[in-house]
Image (cartoon, rainbow, N blue to C red; front, side, top):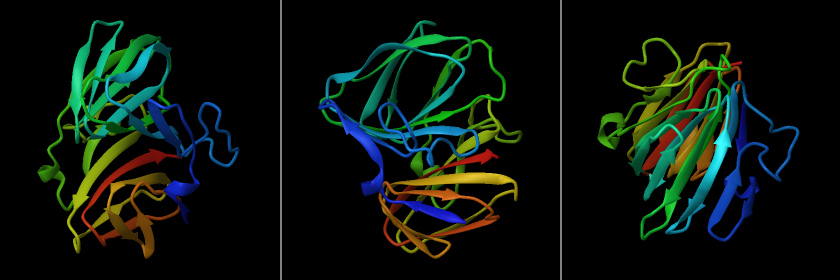
Length: 233
């Protein structure tokens, strides 16, 4: 089963400095049919105006992955961490027992991110933060683990969840295949481009919720950038 979630049908809110679209229920957007997908709880598609951002606020017991699509995001938190994550790169914040942080677009251009929240396997662990570059040419034509709680994903940023975040880039005409355990779910979003997913056409920023599919066959109909969360049910 693959449920297509077109971008223009997503919930969301435009705050002026922030134009947010929600793949799952979040803030004032509530849809009882879109509360979570396995351990995946939030997938926000955020457009952040220059020299604006999220002021300091608190989180606890959530794995928060930020995938920067355009521009850059600057992070600082109550642990003393500071960092600037550029387009194509990833940061992970394990909120654990509690962390206060701020995220700003300090650039002169618009920043666009995916922010993904995954529920941790265990609660009450110490908070942590990390970031890492993931050059797009190293994931050309194939999925690469960007953040993961699965054994074997040694190059990925660690998360404390039975889930992983994968990224891939495909040139027009290229295809790739991803195998999934029968008991796993997947949620795929196109950062840009257009693909055929097991025969279903998806456009830029569309989502696809996948269940009971052990093989995903993806063919790029345009140059495409993909982000996928695989999670145990």
